Length: 407
Image 1 (cartoon, rainbow, N blue to C red):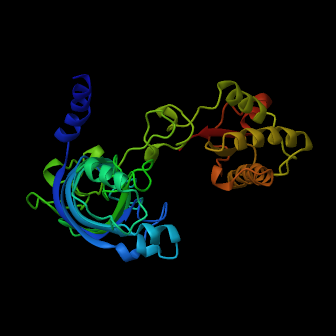
Image 2 (tube, rainbow, N blue to C red):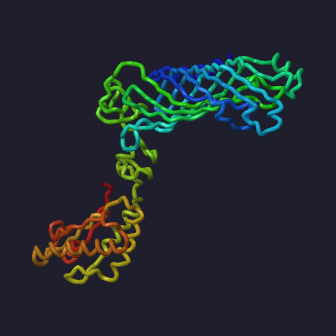
Image 3 (cartoon, rainbow, N blue to C red):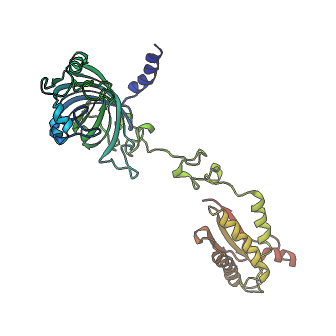
């Protein structure tokens, strides 16, 4: 009872959240692995046809449940290996019709849309499950001429079991044709919990169960109406919250939302998608306040030769430390602003302020700071910090400022 309850717990949510049903057919070749072939091999001389029908329930883009019924013809003959004296002497053969019912779980590792938002043209998948087989082997023991013991042959005839459990597993590829149709190719192995698929056990190898292989082409047809799907993402418009943009079913038809650093800001809106940070800094870690203040203090000591844009030697170590910080926080942008006092011609002061800002820009670029991380501008005497009527005020107004931001 516990097992049934567990099975229902697993399966019922899958069924109730399923998206579509498909019916299909499969046909191809069947081959037998057992007592009348070499171990772990088969011969094409005993390849037969098989066919089947199935019903598939698509749970989501990756998982499906499938019920199927197959018919196959299996056969084997010792004389396919006539070069082996023991097989020539034994000289067994068999034929049987095989009926299989199965329940499979299918897994497709790739979603319907690729990374560019286009529908995939091929879907690989894997399957595994449980099957029930019925066989009624017709065995030729060649009694009277075989080397096998008559009593053992009689025991094999008496012990034949027609029904057995199988464990299908395999893989395949599906190729969609429009919204309704799919063709494909698949192959699967079937280990059986019985050594009597061929009707032979004690007279050959009683310690190893039989197998069989089914492989061929598949076709399936999706049931249900032709619901409008404007963006072709497999989610009907009436259930698609983004009907004009291809998306995924898990996100109600909208593009998948990815947040690699887990900071609550989607990658497409996160300036630093692999380093967590607050929304106030566009998803990037904030530069510690202590470092921001250190830069602000340092740049106050940047000086130039009188009436020129040539940096003094004392200013270079200051800019070296600024370069290290900017490279460490390469998602910050530095706006370098030059200013002067009001002594002299206005146009000369405007050009001088811009040249001094550019001198800092050029030095930082040589130190490895990316150009896209910086911009510069000069404002001349238009933005004073203090009055220009004292020497101290004019000194404060002659400056270069660094404004840091995350765009």
